Figure 1 (cartoon, one colour):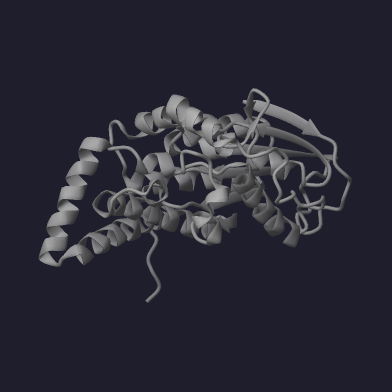
Figure 2 (cartoon, helix red, strand yellow; figure 1 turned 30 degrees about the horizontal axis):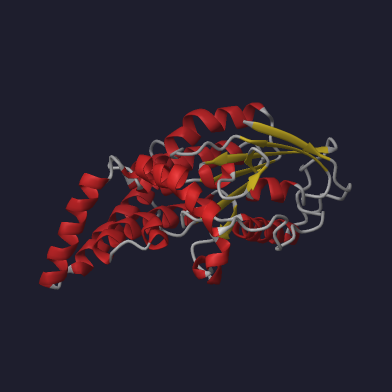
Length: 306
């Protein structure tokens, strides 16, 4: 956990009437290595998009980063959310889900249930909630099609759930799964999974624009230009060899046997001309997961209107 207090320029909360009403905005960031700041080194640690955004909220800000590398939706629900709520946040970001897709235990029903509970916990306390959908890791790593497609389906499923639940709970949602920034190599670190400083700044800038539209961010937008020189090629290769490759290996070890089976199934369906069935099955699973949440919310004795 990292807590930083920044002194910004006082401003009027605008449409976010209760944000920072006591003079200090408490911004809590939850998630995994992306929000932890991996790819944006400062000193002996990481900075990242959330810290850059905190500097632009425009008033006295108390920023706490609870994100931990490798976290999944279960970790956010069971550990990070209670810790965040204990701080009495005004603004909270929940950007999570990629690590779930890299596990053999991936279950979109469980992901949807956990995210619904997390989002509801912040909504019920009047917290301004930030969410985002993300690119699929298979495409970012440049995996062969048969390996990349199963991961792409999983990430699309997570993104669909995040979209739907963000709308349901009134979150401020950033569409980060598409756009030129994904294919711009300058935005990404050596491992091709985490943004570099320029990429983190792009995320912070886009979140700031969404918050400014609602009168929540009243300070200057983060600069899109890096503060530090990009790592040299040799430094990037050294980091990749000593840390980045290990990170990928730790996230994918338990996935690999299942991913190979999924790839074999992908090849079989392609040979038979039935690949569309895999997409349809994934879509049905997402629809079922979201429908189950809707049914669970209905009160006893509920009967649909005829």
